[in-house]
Image 1 (cartoon, rainbow, N blue to C red):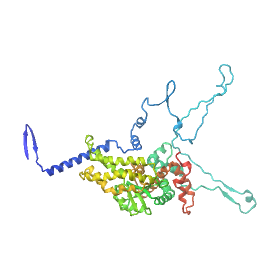
Image 2 (tube, rainbow, N blue to C red; image 1 turned 90 degrees about the vertical axis):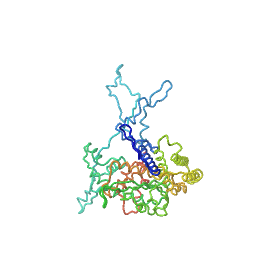
Image 3 (cartoon, rainbow, N blue to C red; image 1 turned 120 degrees about the horizontal axis):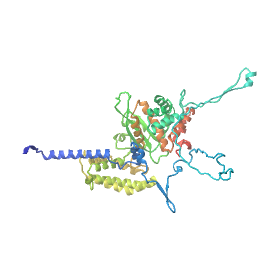
Image 4 (cartoon, one colour; image 1 turned 180 degrees about the horizontal axis):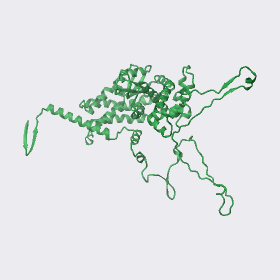
Length: 517
């Protein structure tokens, strides 16, 4: 150790060993990587973001209208022979073909139709039509069903007994309640599709003079879910496990009143869904208090086939008749993170960039194969993608990186998951990534940002049931509100003693008027 006096300033030199220097250098590089990566995640744009995600972020802006509005002078223009005419757009480009049309005719009175020149009555010679779009906010209507009772007047006069008949009553969606199928479906749609919590809905109705409390709405939602939606969910579950290709994912959920756990403890919402080739789509959520593999094993009891999943080890503990398929989107994401952990001028020619390019080649080929049959897709994958995979595996053996570095973690993930990442080559119905499940669970994640937590395990599972029917309906091309209304109107009147009564209410069996267009 040596000290040098420089004017009034003292510098100190410390001597350390080569091993200590390398350790400090490694720690400093790791910290700088983490800092750059955190800045990228917080402030940078993600190359994996979809347009829908970007739109969702834009909606958080206070001046959202300004952000989406076209800049001045950006109106569409139509070229005409002598000049250019601005085009404002047609309402017919916006509305569906079956939208109700309200026709308002504007006539002149007889006095106004008197010709100012000769005094005769003017006749109609043509019309000019202007179409506008009216948007009417949700409104409350009090429905009053009056059921009449009938008696035979002749028997009443001449016989001892008088026959009486009553108009048959439609079964109530909730006996003893003033709830209607439309009201419950609207509340569910606002909460689970539009992510509007019940307290906001309570405030909105109050502004219209309707004193509908969040407690009442909550009771309606839970009771309808348990009585009418749960049997449909269970039927979907029975059909799900008959499929041969599934996707799975999970995310956290906080439940305030859960036996044996603190309010701050993590619980989980699991997601299981069908792939692209297995008949009508099915998307099911299930609440569980933990992330243990036993929950997935129990839910998937009776299932035998391929399961797309991320790198979570719990999926690898499932029974042997379930073959886990790895996710190349996760592998690519880790190389992307390793690249973004480097300074921009230091990325060219790096191992992180090379690993990312290998992954990008696979996705590029998959895009070309998306319209092929499963059999042809398998052949093309073995021809075009298998050599890339072989080269990638050989390349990983030649690359070294600190285990705790971002690149080191990417290489470790790739090697550890390699048997599962290769499995998509076995069947053309399989996909390169588990993005299908990630997109489905994102709906719940967005909603979670608004409701934050569930109150009880029962409420969490009821929410899972509602989310399941809504997301399955959306995947089937149905409007969630119309589908839920249809289910809640028909379920109370069905004979529950018939074994497959709930099957008639599946999204795949919904009538055409439940479809979005």
